[in-house]
Image 1: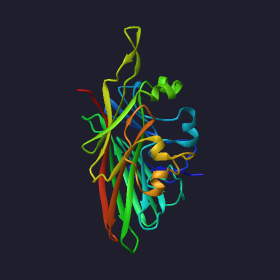
Image 2 (image 1 turned 60 degrees about the vertical axis):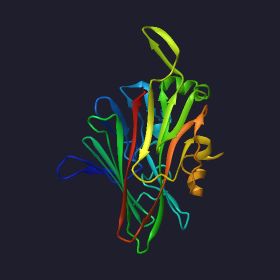
Image 3 (image 1 turned 30 degrees about the vertical axis):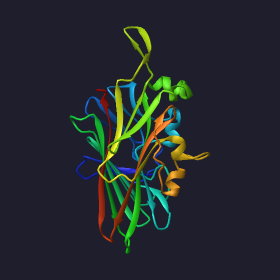
Image 4 (image 1 turned 60 degrees about the horizontal axis):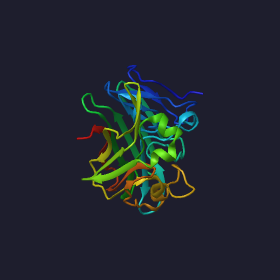
Length: 282
């Protein structure tokens, strides 16, 4: 079975089905910030070292079976309540209408569903420690559409191994706040060996962040508020209801999601840019 082919000029590999036998990843990096990006936007990000400066999460061995979590754009029709995702993942609707292009320094994921053609181009700038998501939503239906868009990432800050083995304990030190339209996330517990001596009481010296060029109507920073009880990434309660909770604070499992709304006439498109990255504490 064919899952893709090279472009005519040989500069891109074009994946035509999202459900590949294994995640098909591209390494997007400037030598400091690295975003490992699959054909559906899955994968994790880190700064300089994946062990001690992790930014976003992948769920260990199960990533080979699920390709989750990732850099997602959830979509919702505000009039009908229909839900889908611009990446195909994590809602995994019909595989038709999907295409991903892995190029040198970028990955573009396109998906057509519910009368909306969506495209996300991911890349890491040469001089900035972040990843850029360039998002386009085009209305190919014959009627005006009111579309809600929800960019999402799952944080996994600082020490990856410690967070994996002491998940409940490490969550107690998480902090997530929103300032001037930007979600900022950090941890007060950075378990790292300095000079051969363990230093478990250090605060992580960085902030991870998510922001967007589109007007932000609401946000969420807590998994529980976003996901809801007995649910997963394929059916978050906040997305189903079309309303994020503006959750923020400390001591809980943290993620990042933003809420946008667009009115798109037939044949027109809406564009916005999402930034996810890291910066040093001042």
